[in-house]
Each structure stands twice: as C-alpha cells, then as structure tokens.
Amino acid sequence: MNSSMKARLRTFLQHVAPELFNWYKSYHLHHYYRKRFGRLQNSARQLFYAGGQPRILSGPFAGMVYLDETVWGPVTPKWLGCYELELHDIVEAAIACRYDRVIDVGCAEGYYAVGFAWRMPEAEIITFDIDPIARRQTRRLAAMTGVSTKVRVNNECGWADLNHLISDRTLVLVDVEGYESTLLSLEDVPGLKKADLLVEIHEEHGAGCTNAVEQAMRERFQDTHLLTWRRSSDRKSSVEQFASLWKGKINEEEFCAMLDEGRPVPQVWLWATTKPLGR
Image (tube, rainbow, N blue to C red; front, side, top):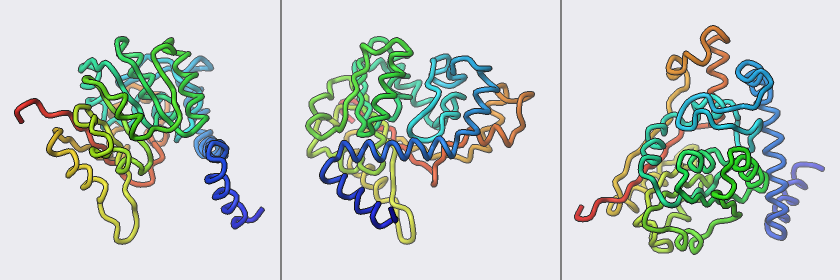
C-alpha cells in the first residue's frame, strides 16, 4: 500500500470509525516509540533494576512502581524520576493543596494520574484519553499501585464533561496535543474559573509561527488566575542534579540520553491558580 492510499485509509477511518482509527494510530505510535527508545529502555532496565520491577527512582513519585513500557514517548525519564523536572516543585505544591478531585485530560499511560492518586489518598482522580492503549495502560498502572478504586478512566473529554466534573477544590491537568485552546474555553466551561490548571502548551511551529496559544491562554485566564509559566531546558544542564543515580554506573552522555523526553521543540507549561477573593 503506497503512502497516498494509507493517507486515504486514515482519513476514512477517522471519520467513519473514530475508535478504530484511534486503535490504528495508537498501535503505530506504540511501535514507533518501542523502536526508537527500546535500546535505552533495555539498558536502563538492566542497569537500575537488575531484572526486577521498575520503580521511579527520584522526583515527586519516587518509590512508586511503574510500567515496563509506555505509549507516549520514552519510559526512561519517568523511571529515573526526571520527567518534566521543570514541574517538580509545582507537582509538590499541588500535592500539598490536598485537592478533592484531579481531572487529567490526555493522561497517556497514567504517570500523573496514578502518581497523584498514590500521593494523595483523599483525592478522586478522573482521567481522559482518546488513545485506547493509553487507557489500558492507565488501568494497569493503577492496579499495580493499588489505587484502581480511585482512578476513573474515560475516553474523550468535552466541554460538558469537564464543566460537570469541576468542583470547588479541583485540579485540571491538560495535555491534549494542541486541543487545549479549544477545550479550555471559559464561555463553554465556566467552571474553569474556580479550578487550578496545569496545561502543556502546544504551538504551531515553522516559518512565520508565533506563540499564539500561549498568548491566548494568558489573555483568557489573567483576570481569574495567577499565572506561572515554565519552559523546558536542555537536559545536559540537569545531569549533575541526578549524579547519585548514574555516577559510577554509566557515563554522562549515556545518562543524558536516558533523560531525553523526545520533544521536537522546547516545551512551555502554564500553571494557573485561582486568585484569592478580592484580587
């Protein structure tokens, strides 16, 4: 089958059988990431776990048992506990807030959803992801960590779903590969005004592109929330921070490769907390 025929088949499936299309897309992504990061995963497994069950080695979820594979991207940064290290203090601050509910839209295999359930026994965790393998992995991870009764796994999240679920003490995590600007609409989801938000921003990249999504989020939430922006850094600058994990075992270059999250461009996140009354 040539590339043109494959493209037509994908378009047909997406419109006629969206769930079948999601399985098709998920299978190919899963295969791609295994091929791209499989060697590093095997090396890290042998180096840090000696054939045993992987556990997260550092960071906010240190000690939590983890899957031996992922759907979205490499698993080694999560095993090491270095994944999205720019957010570690924000994650700890969120845990300290003792939210009643965490809504994770675009949960992938459940790193944050299950991690929050593991660290916050009192919280209810509600997840969404259109990727069927991701949903399956989230359920597996929740079972492995003993939090299955606290983690609800759902397919697609729409405006009505999100607005209905937001209560007075709610954290909303959003990583939806560019759909965030549509989903996080104050007009369609007025409940967002009383929720704290942690959003991964996805811009269009290329000649003539601007930070349009970042600016839209800034204008949309600046009246109701206190906004904090985080930007990813080169992982080479963080190698020494985790020296206790790798020195004497592997060289700096190999460890830096294990930190790689496979991002094609620098990442921006928005941490938005509701403003106190009167501000």
